[in-house]
Image 1: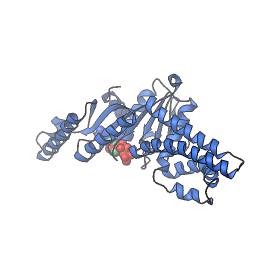
Image 2: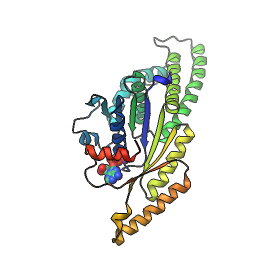
Image 3: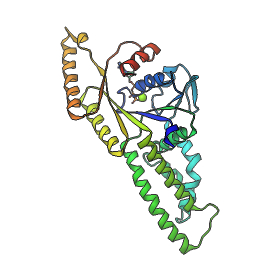
Image 4: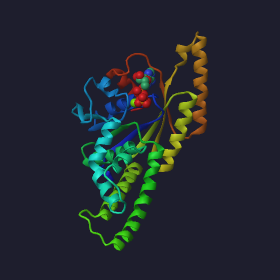
Length: 295
Ligand SMILES: Nc1ncnc2c1ncn2[C@@H]1O[C@H](COP(=O)(O)OP(=O)(O)OP(=O)(O)O)[C@@H](O)[C@H]1O
Ligand SMILES: [Mg+2]
């Protein structure tokens, strides 16, 4: 099955390190030869500026081979409701005295939007429309680990439900057991997509906090089973621009220190990207960046 599935590349890292910029440079590169989609949950909505077009919850074509979709948390939750609210109510109300507003509580639970993004990307991947899916702002380790908890939970829920329904002798219109079994398959499919078709870049800057966080994210991704492409160390000051300025020399010394720290603490490849000047949303700059990424 996986041979004709789309390949997914995710970009993850601390806020503001350059995930969206790297995603766009990567997508422009792949779009030269493959039908490509960028899925973004960038809260600042920068794709609109980058592509000079209104980008919304609908898939928006940029070129014949490049589409983008930018989803806000609000839109993700709307889509989640449309798809799952009835099912969740059916299952819960089959063994708990709950009202419809239970869905509001679940919607407020942390991570529901991120989790639904996994399902959303799976749907996109299964549509077979795209050869490459670039995923700007990857799910956090907490969300990924939830998948394992869910798999376990649904398995137990199915067993408990079977017993309960037997005792109660109820037959509802929609069989809750079938729904739970479907959720279980969905969770397994998402885990398989992440393990088999997805690789990740961890973007970081040469400073203490982004480096520490990147290393943590990197090891969590690996633990989960996602292939790591490596780290992108972005916004490194080139030595020649620092010469003659005490301020910049000191800044560069500090950057060097964290670059070395990253190197010592991981065996993964590290792509160094310099701090660039000028408008990074311009096409030629993004192409320059793609070349620096080694494409
Ligand atoms: N190599 C670079 N040189 C100079 N500026 C850069 C470089 N990479 C990114 N930037 C700039 O840094 C800012 C943040 O980049 P970007 O929006 O890609 O980060 P992000 O990780 O997606 O942020 P967020 O977490 O808010 O989504 C942008 O203004 C971008 O143009
Ligand atoms: Mg971003």
